[in-house]
Image (tube, rainbow, N blue to C red; front, side, top):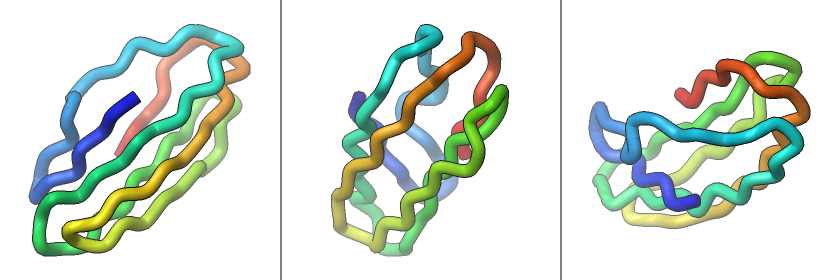
Length: 72
């Protein structure tokens, strides 16, 4: 799943993920400043990636339960 972190914006703004899915986020930050991406909620605790400006990285998260998750 592709995620772009830009100054004051997360693209896409909403995601649909089912219970028992394991998702690899392909994270890009085309901006100048470093950003962090955190996924938490409903049994998923603080998966966290920090990415410098003009960089890319990946982060894999397993979603054990259905429900609402915060992607910050």
